[in-house]
Image 1 (cartoon, rainbow, N blue to C red):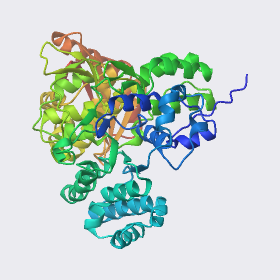
Image 2: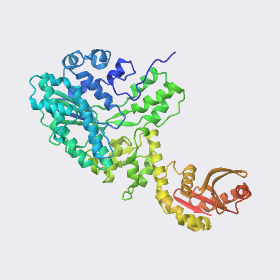
Image 3: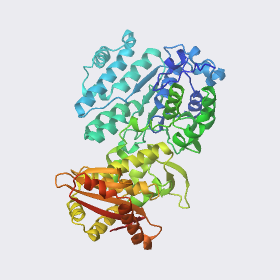
Image 4: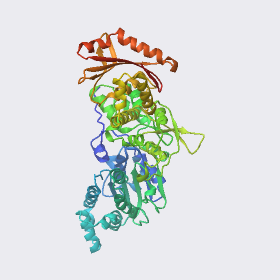
Length: 552
């Protein structure tokens, strides 16, 4: 049977998805929920990236916007069944929809330019407001300046509240404000070093629109973090916040199990259910198990296009994953054991702080665990006997692979920056005792996963000698078999053959070293290297047990 389903990969425009008949998982129940909950002035919904925030906001804009006729877009969807709600609300309200997700720049000036350009586009969209006969002459000139990107900084700071007032006067109705990814400019500014300058703009821009604004019916705001301490929402009464810990809107961001099951059936990809669950499930919003929609759609698209069911890490391409690296770089936090527990599929218990401020995100270990939780790198799996703490784990294979890659790169980079002269001196001088001491210290300080499998030790030793001017050959085709590691110094025509073994316990380390050395001789690993013209070939047997090692 021909598969005619088209998935909306990377699309967040609700109108485009519906008009062009892309596959759409019905999230219109969010409208009903919002209106039932939203007797207040505003709702802030925080979710990790790639969980459908922008698409949800586009859907809300299409539903409420008084300038549109959206009946055909919502035909057949859940919300269309609520006739009275649709009659009262569909296309009945003036709407301002603004996304800040593109506000970025290496310096404040370039980010500010991006922001003013975005605002100018917004004012151009609503140029019809200039037809308002009663518009005050000074208001008209301010509007023109904002539209033409000539506004003063003070006018930029008040631009959203200004637009709500003009729009309310035009329609004789209060305005709905939809603000997507509100915290992106602050997050980017913090990472690039102009946090205070950006906050000085964003705080009044949002604050004046949200606080005591008589022209505002209500606001819906999305972002990654709830940054109330940033003073943006200070003094904003009746403000509802919905984070990944809450249940209010948990089913409307990300895919639920029934939605994924139906999607797999509709795309004839039922055979992929186990892979998708293992790799892209495992997030918990409130008490609901959630899949990452970005990953699920990309994976199914790949299966439909290529027929291969091999999973892929789609999430890591959407961010630099620097938060994990930031954590690892902090030598004042002793998190090695906790990371090892997580990397081996275990849980840790941490106190989560949901009221974070961007400029102090990395100031404490608690803040960093909270950040990993709120941005989706860790997920809640339950509460502890200590009610102030939360049980956390890595949600799935995809995020696990990001952690492993981050740890591997961090360790390699740390080694590259460190002085390894004593290591190489002991190596070439055949000082096995000194090597045992150095390797044991390094092993104690690294972060292990794969439960101390041979691959872990192999990679550990290989990285020690990488990027140091030597030729490093891993599992080198050699003699009568494959030696674990060969290190060659061509300039001085010397080489080292290393065979690795894992001991059952600490007492067996010496026995395993003897076995390793015996294997090097029996398999003649060194002979071919000597035949290639190397004058000196040193043989080492190294045995490991957890974080203990012995070199002979």
